[in-house]
Length: 185
Length: 276
Image (cartoon, rainbow over all chains, first blue to last red; front, side, top):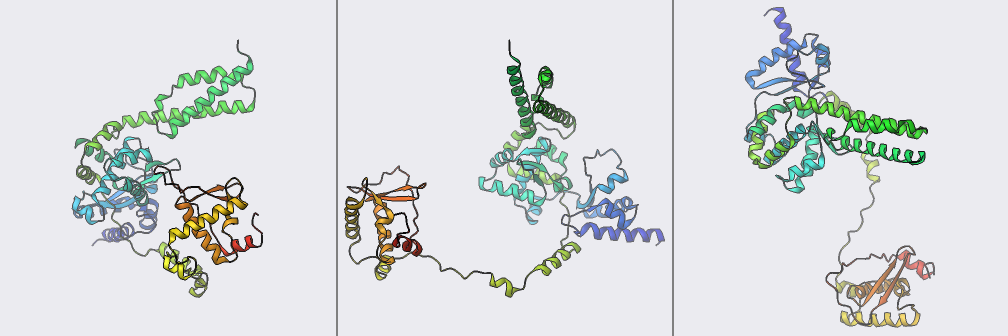
């Protein structure tokens, strides 16, 4: 193995440790942390890792601080501020989703909530979301579910009881695909 | 012709309405194009020469500030509509209402790529745990703080009450009626307006007897032989016997009035410390 290859192999291992194991309260690693641990060429390390993960149906997901157009190449500064996660590349089957602890009702509630907030430009009154969820879920469950989505990091709520999408939705949900899939049903 | 004062007054009201409207649009996520910006600017401009007081100028500035927020929202709204993420909320709402839960989940699973994360002891959690351990007092210190367990409450049967000499061993209705007669007699002797102070009626020579009378009084009220008049501001409670037993009116909301007959309360009344 050439010296260069060995260096990258070691950096990939280090990146795997950092990305798979939770280091903070929230999962994921900030770009600047990766730069500090792996060096300035960490985007290249991550892209090699992403290739390795492809056959395993996993991917390195980059979540920028602000919405980033996909066509533009991100700058190093933007990457430093971004957060990196390992996520599933493909989708789960309903059976698998159940296996990882999600009931179909709760998952449908989450889908409805996220889709509705997206359609309202990323912000919707909690009351409106609750009313919408009551169409499909028992009333007593609605409030509990929204609190749960907030706790998991899918949603956040301000003092005026407005709901917003939070870090986990940005990391895990392809928002455009969700809307397209719902509308095409 | 309007006087200057009237004009200032009208101007203030108009600006306050503008501020309120802009705030509502901002806080309730309403369509920002509901606000007619040109019209508001015309109003602000129209009244601006009348402002002399600093408060009025502040009001003017606040209106402009709120209007600027609405213009920002309008700009965001246009940007959002031009993105591929724009969906008509009504269309989506209708779609969601019509779809089965299973179909919604299927769509979501196509767009959901959950994070892979392993939970383990991290440096952060170890640090937190150590800090917690250092500040945790030893068990022998913590256990001292626990209060002695209180005796659990329960329901006393009639037999128990007889054994405790709270009730006498005679037919309850008979006993209740003689108690009712006693109340009526006392009201006739010492009462006013057909009623007597609750405490004047129940307080007896001994605490046990007081408990018995309070217990019986509660049945007099429950079974419609008497009623309670509570004056919360004066902290007075009166008991008023009825001439005939009242039947409960089904639609009338019944109210429970808890009255604590504690040993301290009894002693206070015996010493004449209560409101006599």
